[in-house]
Image (cartoon, rainbow, N blue to C red; front, side):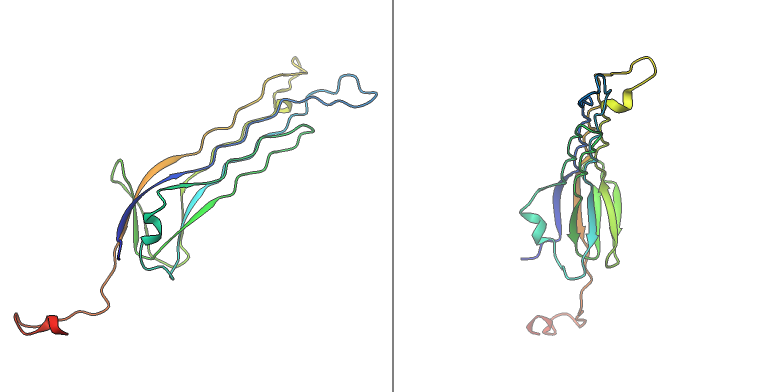
Length: 174
């Protein structure tokens, strides 16, 4: 079975939330804020793999989702960034936005990469909101959601062999 066009959804990872935390140690009464930032959400990357010839692998999985960023922690520890997800496509694939029909990229060369969805921005911890007038802020930033896209993938292949001849000359028996 040969599949030359398929529709998929891609969602980049959400950014991790910041942390609201305060430094607490023995003999330090008012340690101040020490909440860390969240991690960045993972991206969705399209990459050309010359070993693939069809889009059959993409037919049965419709949603591709990258990992979310982790939340920040106390002691100004930043959350881990989400892992990016790489979707492998055969050479000659056209990537279009399904809603608008706009051509995003034509993937031709082996190893060519294209970031189709960018991960969400991280949230800031309460240590970032400290000012000269507000020494102990209790606010922190939430992570932003990652981009979501509906993609239409179309594979354009050139034939390896062409048969030319007169009508009714027996070309189909070859």
